[in-house]
Amino acid sequence: MPKVFDGHCDTILRCYLDGRGFRENGGHLDLERMKPYGGWAQFFACFGEPEDMPGKPLWKVFQEEVALFRKQMEENTALIVHCRTAAEAEAAWAQGKAAAFLSAEGAELLECDLQKLEIAYSWGLRAVNITWNHENILSGTNVESPQKGLTEQGRAFVKRAQELGILVDVSHLSDPGFWDVAELAKKPFFASHSNSRSLCSHPRNLTDEQFTAIIRNRGVAGLNMCDEFLGQAPTVDTLVSHVEHWFGLGGEENVSLGGDWDGISHPPAGIGGIQDIHKLADRLLRMNYSEEQVNGLFYKNLMRVVREVCTM
Image (cartoon, rainbow, N blue to C red; front, top):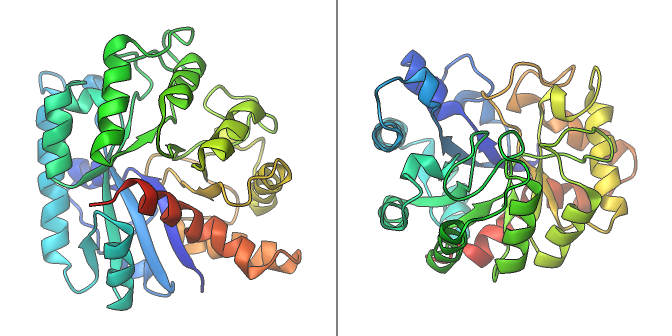
């Protein structure tokens, strides 16, 4: 079984809402189902929509979800460890443990505030989406104010995140916001869970020009399992088509996994959760892709980006 490094899941929110944990939870991923893999690393995103949590500030939601994440780390110390760097993830794998990284899906969880970004970094945050679907004071999104790019505060937020060693995540961001990040970035950034817009015309996906910019930046784009971003009635072969399209643009070192696990309703046929993601590796190997290419997609490309950005 291959090693796996996945860039995005909403499992923290799922557990926050239903009271279940990381070991076994009936969702798209848990610790028991990942045991067969040769190593598993995962970005666990904190997330919350204001409409689902009326009267509760999202900064408070973020703090409560970080506390839940820490509790799950403490309760499952034999299986998983909170990591901040690639070296820590590789050390966890050497001990037979999974590696958990912490992210925030939407800077509004941090009130788009530089001081709160620094606090979150001290708590172990190592990736942040500039926006979710709702416009915020940093930028427009692919849903709200899609013509709006980064504000001055947004530019300052991106710069500070990169200075700290936090991965800037452009999934959900408006197209102008994407290009503003690409212009500003001094280190690799990523689109943690976005597919190819050429193959599936959805504004959440990346244009070929955007993916080429990610290649130039030495970042990665994470393959999303959501049917809306893959195409009609998607299968494992649909996943392969997105991978092949990006490989064809010269992105063999710039494609990763970003399943959007526990944040989607309909993954491809035959993919019930992250336990089935090896089917993509199996299919690519049967198509005579090399183990090096498959390992790049499955863990090495994202690990390289984390190594370059999250240095301490």
